[in-house]
Structures are given as C-alpha cells and as structure tokens.
Length: 212
Image 1 (cartoon, rainbow, N blue to C red):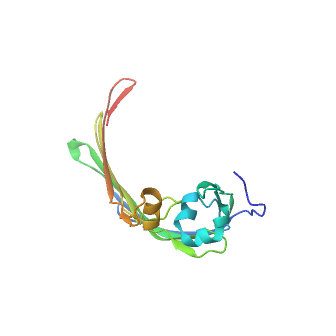
Image 2 (cartoon, helix red, strand yellow):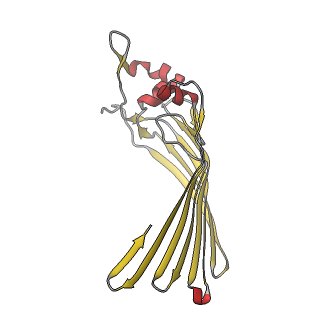
C-alpha cells in the first residue's frame, strides 16, 4: 500500500443542534440535527469504485495494470486526499418507563436516524456523487433510514427484552451489479427487519441466566 507524496491532513467542519422534550415525567423525546463537511478526505479509490464509475476510470485508467494479453493484473490504490464529503441528518430518541403495579415495570425506547444528504467526491477534482439510498461500489451503502425499537419488562428476578432493528433498503447501481455479476441492471435491496428476544433470570445467588 502506497501513499500520495502530497498527502495532507483532512479537515472537517461540523455542527449540531437539538432539543429534549419531557411532556410528562415518564416520557423523554430528543431531536437532533447534525451536519458534517470534510475536506481533503484521506482514503483510497478502490478497484471496484474505479471500474464502476466511467468518469473515474477515464481519469485514473493509468492505475489499472494489465498483462500483455490485456487482462487486469492489479489496480493501484494509493492512500490520498479524495476531496470533500457533505452529509447531514436527523436523530430521534424516545424513551419511556412506567410501573404496572403488581405486574412489574415496562420500559420502551425508539432510536432512529434519517440521513438527509450524503455526497462526496471520489477524486480531488471530480464531481460530487450522491450515495444516499445507493450502493455504488467501494463505499458501504448509505440507507436513508435506520431505527431500533426496544421493550424491556421487569418483574422481580425476571426480565424480558424484545428488540427490533430496521434498515431501509437501497439500490445497487447497474455498474455495481455488472461488475460483480455481469448483469447490466440495477438491483433493489429490500428493507431488513430483525427481531431479538431475550429472557433473563437472576433468582440464583451469584448467577444470572439468559436465553435469547
């Protein structure tokens, strides 16, 4: 792994603001907006990204090393300053807990993130690419929405926890699908929703049993 001889430290500018509401003692609602801008990001242009985006391939085709037969031997991926990143979003956090009399205590929480923008340059002079809701190769997908919903019930030595983790689906671009599978068509990744259940008992001295 090599690095650009002109590599510079990356710089960022970010801000956030939010508010917390407690309409009743048992309920808390927090809302936060965040905004992050980075310059001179340090990273690499992966082989997948370079081959999947025609503009990048034209700019950095000299990094693609081929055999005398024309087959790709390897692709140079030096550590370098990639340009700018602009991203923003909203976080929400809702929590409540209340007594059920002789039936114990029930707690519930909901945390979610809505990404409003995720654009970055994959080269110092390249255009901004929108990654929100897409997988374009080289970078992890950027889902527009993710949340976790959780319930927690306690009664004496017993505890039951139920959790749902949800991620909105995204689109695999045609270039990515073609590079990986040889099919020149986009693919829509479906939403994912996962439920987790755990039951705990601590009625035995110095021992806590959990099944889940």
